[in-house]
Length: 436
View 1 (cartoon, rainbow, N blue to C red):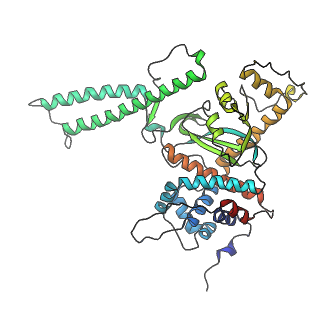
View 2: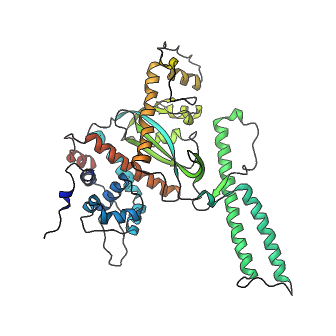
View 3: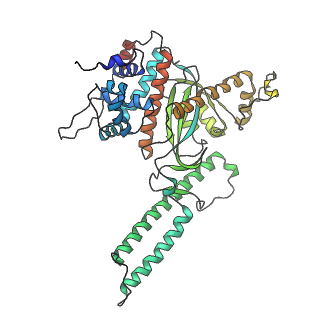
């Protein structure tokens, strides 16, 4: 007749035990909790954070899904003490207001991995970006040309309606419609389209400036207006139309820096609204916290390469970059299998491109670069397939960045659990010591 002990329904090595113990040992502080002043039940951060991490790690990202899981999932009920069921609004508010603590947790978990000798303090990283859907339909977007045409059309209609209102014996409108209301509606729509045009023009100017820095010799003519197909989305204005495997979609470009020394943990992450990675090498490398990893070398595909980016990363004793200059096929030809002599070292005055080609042709360079496909690409595959995360639920870059932090944090908990599972190395005293 006694209540069920949920611990009897979970195996001793279940990941939920690891998440609860690890979060408790990290000693995180500074959480913002929901304060309604209505007498509603409050929930401790020591419950809410493991709840989010576990649900994200098992493919539940919506606050309503998580609320439902508190009733139906044994592990989730165990996290919540069996009888607590935070509603979706409480979960959403906690997630939205605790970005700083989530970032702290991301770094501390990696520091713990270093203490456990799972993550090396010095080593290489592999960087890449992948497109994830935005919480906005591409049909809620307007192109620069269409906005220009619609503004002209709305101005024409406003003039016609104004003239109609001034007529003494004008023809009445349909029932329920009025001239002032129709004018106001068109003026409101026109203001939104004008704002969309201003944003598209500002983005175009920024893109031109970046292109001039990247390839100044090739910029012979500067366009004055954006291409007609450049778009602005009214639902999530900061997201962009990007080319994906499913065609052009409203998306975000999620960046990750992954350890290449064996752990496959994500050591750095960020979100960008740029559709390609030409401008992302430097900020993605800098996203790796110094207390997590001293980066010795960086592996990147051809999409990240530019002479300026490589120079910026390597300046002042920075890590060595190994970036493909051309798109490489996954299939290896017979010539690729043949043993090759070491190439001749380039002259001191060689360009960045010449030095990069030399690096990738050496035996050591080829071996290093091969790690890129074995590290960062599988990580995105796990996040999309095993965890099921393919689309952001929040809107705006700040909130999307928060959500990406939670996704990568959940991935790291999954990965760290697998790395230490079956080994007697979960020393919570180490975590508590490094937390203080």
